[in-house]
Image 1: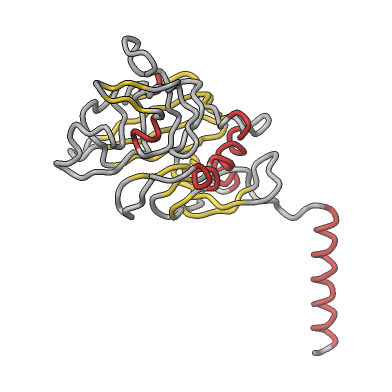
Image 2: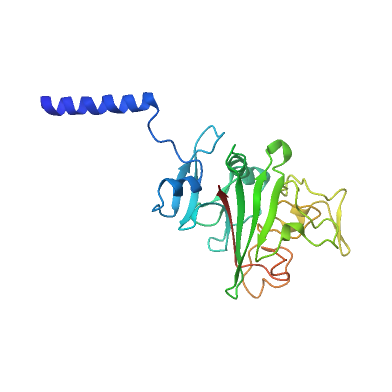
Length: 261
């Protein structure tokens, strides 16, 4: 190596070391909204983020448009044939493919929604097999930690899909606001000692629907239900359900996003 090249390489290492000492190296973004803020020409895809309070980085899929950067936390459209009939540990750590159908993981959703001075809102996109789409937003939105069973806290509703979390005031147990997260092997719902539907008794909503969600007893919304294509999607309880918009059919797709201010 020539003397000139050796000096150039040495200067490069020195500058890199000084940058690390001074903390000038750019840290990973806290979420997809910050990725968009840093570079509004960013494209949608998988990014590594580090939310406030997180001890280590993790990967998410960012949906980026002129509106901003949205962190995708759930996608359910049948394309990958992904089963959402999973146990508690899978819902905690996440499953599926970030580029396709997946559930990000409750532990990561908790970190994303509990950032200091960085509130989040939830945007839910849904569509039916006729080609119609709707949305629901909750502002603010957060979930509790594992000791609180990732309890749902969904603020003011807006949108075109209706507030399915609120359920039907005439049906006891249908309001899911403030509900704990339940899985088939770890029911934390309102079925105590059991829920009655017609002449059938269930000890848990997760067991009834074979999915995990913020059930009450059992509530109405369930975007983690079994995906069904027509005509099997009609009048099915075990389904991708948002009944304030489509009360008697399983949806074609659902996607859940976190948007940070």
